[in-house]
Image 1 (cartoon, helix red, strand yellow):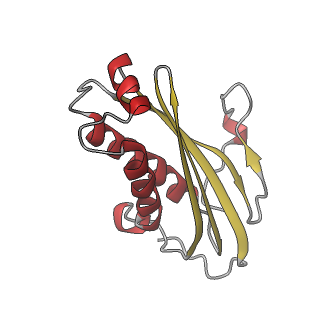
Image 2: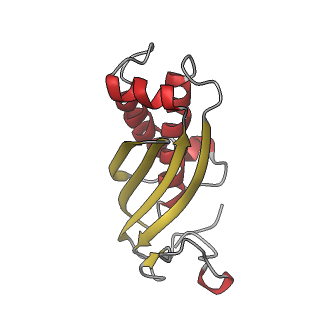
Length: 157
């Protein structure tokens, strides 16, 4: 693990997003509330929050942090579900991994909830969209979604 003890404690946030591509039947089931396992969106939202909190248990060299807030949003679109997660802490290292884990766990939970309707669901486009805090300051993904090699953050700030 990287030693972060010399870093300042600052408020840090990170936002991530991802998608679950679904069949028209699965989208209809979500919109109509007819998913056999129950409220798939609510369960996925709670799973995303749990995922953020359990990140150091899943990612071997990830620092355990005091998570001060997690917001997980799921929006049903015509071709699937868009997932966004924002994680906040006041600590010595960032919460990018927590935001990514939140989105990933929410997406996997959604697939588990909907698999009886759509066995071909696909998780795609999981990525960091923004981060703030720490000495590297704010970062936002460019509008075109591409990241040049000189704008990548090489570590957890």
